[in-house]
Length: 439
Image (cartoon, rainbow, N blue to C red; front, side, top):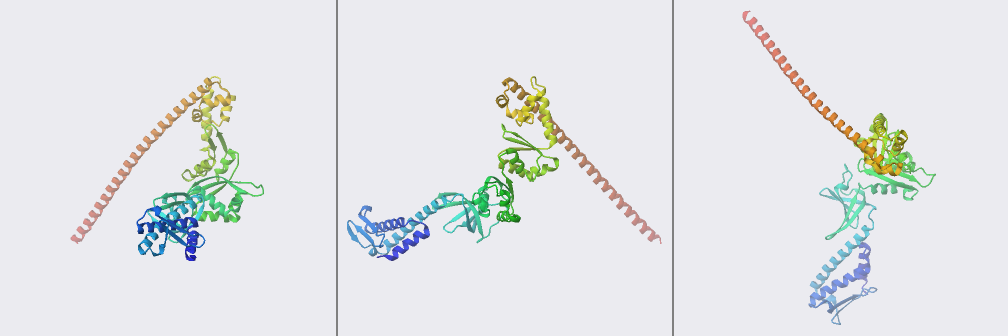
């Protein structure tokens, strides 16, 4: 009984996650290959069998038994090389199968080294790649440092399996919530939607399936303990927990917090929400570089326009005045148009006549007249704005020229004053020297 061979096979199967039968088949194929080269025969002439229970090796050449252990050093070396190659291929296949099933799962590894900006992470059995584009902006990684990331892709490459990791993927936030908030992993709290700009800000819309559990409070934790752990893992990235609501109006209002929303008009035809906020809330609603409104739009799947009350009223007045000038359009019809979420002549042009024919029961001719009049007014306003902008640019250039000329004049005047002052000093010195000479 060849107990040593059985122990080796069992150890390899356990460490490399390869089935015992595959390893035995590889050993048989390697020994057969070495014997063929030694005897110079064809594949059919050599047969090698390993007993799975005892580990005994039986080899046959043309039906006669041979002892493979007496073939010599060169066939043994050949068998070794073939076996190593086949085991490596099996291990790559095992790694690919294992990690392909784990795509979307969060893993923890150790930072190994940098390769052209990408971080090589040691996952134990194999190495994975954290590309530069999948790293959170501003983060740095040091060798032997532990790092958590999401498996986003597994692909086979010549001689290796490439495992791509990400710390910027939105699902990475989901996995962190599942780890830090038990109610999420237990599916008591559901994450309905998520929008992220990695390294800067994330908005997460949550809903509770249990009326006794507050979704927002559970995610934040006592004194913010749970959300703090997630923020620390993300290097200080801001996370807004938004309460989910089936009403789009309520959800959009929640998503735009901390800004206070005054009014929301929804146009389902354009999938656009016109949000009215006061002047003092405008910067909060838009956010730094438009980040707040951009994330809110992605979270709610609505295009969001932010307007002040004055801008909202002005756009609506222009639309109402334009429609009133059309024959057969009364205030009742205008109210129905506004109820569709159309709040400007630009909206009317984008919507087109068909929705009004279907929703309001208008004649196609009348709907077309309303759209045409709105489009004409929209072009007139756009032209007026462009002219005003051009006039402002001309005025700004003229003011800049006048300012440059004024500064030049002041600099020249200052130089003259400085020269005259020097001349006075010279005259005074000459006067003093003349007095000394006379004395």
